[in-house]
Image (cartoon, rainbow, N blue to C red; front, top):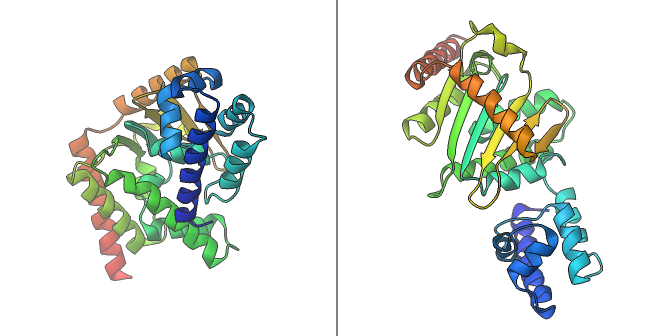
Length: 277
């Protein structure tokens, strides 16, 4: 399903939710309390701005006695999403987050990736993928990154391990363009990037990514991902522990100025190698 069609379906979801809620004589706040979310959340669902998770859709069906229509709609949209099943909810949360903090130990995070960098990663991990699949992954990544261009974009803090800056993903030309893209975002103050140098070896044991997200109308969440799976965490104690881990990583980084200088130097090295090969 194309992304535009998905958006149309979410808008239909919201219109139907409003209609069924009002038929039952419930306010947004009353429905929210019964399905364990805020009334403001229900309003965002109805406007098509926020997408409910599957368990919330199931509770809405139960309260409004809709015969499972909301659950089926959410399942359909998840099944046709370009994202892995464990990442679908994360992509939706990114779009409404007010602050995102991310640690990337081995590769550039998706919100910062260029099309060619994404292509190189996708082909490397899916060597038999069709061109249609590769293009779909590129489009999904670039659409996610559009939040950094929005006037209401979230604060975006990124801690990169130096390995992610130095690894020649896609070759020297692709990597030079990728780092130049990050540098441009830093200079536009769209993102704050700091780098954990290789000399700080104690942090190399963290092989998975870590993403922290904050919101206006809900508690913060954390997301961790390894090569084959990801986990969205909302338990306050676990999220607090993840935030402490991120704080410790940030303490180990170079300053923003030194991190930018390192990234610029790496980009120049890749650009020089690209010219000589």
